[in-house]
Image (tube, rainbow, N blue to C red; front, side):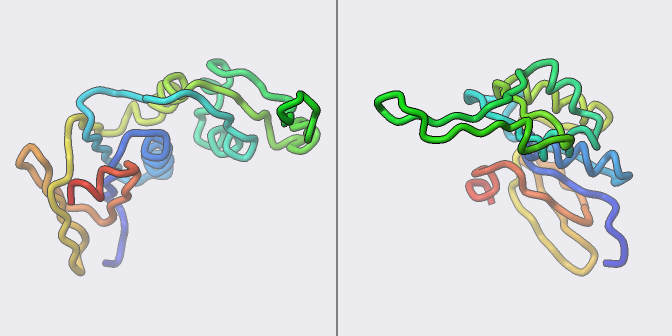
Length: 164
């Protein structure tokens, strides 16, 4: 294979959305498939550290995350008696890299979907087989269709292991 152009991203979670957005932004013909029939982001929340926010800024996705989340300025850990075990000033640690943002998963997912607005996204679609040869990867989907790709990125956690 001489050139990578057409890329399939499997999984529309945080990793899949971010990967598809980055590939599309840098000019790759990107397609995203997700086995769930609707956009969903189960789970609670977490902190996107400044280095992650810097990457989202490079993709033009940081403003949606900042506006949906909360800046986390300190990181403190306590023992069972309430005594401080550690206290880190995240603003001082990360400096100009950017803020750390605490955000619930559904809001982060929603902000990241903006990055794939111009990407072909197919929900309710699972992979049934992958065949790789010197020309690339042929992928068969659960709806009976297939596609040829130069590269397939598995970003769906457990889905690829379960379906292929």
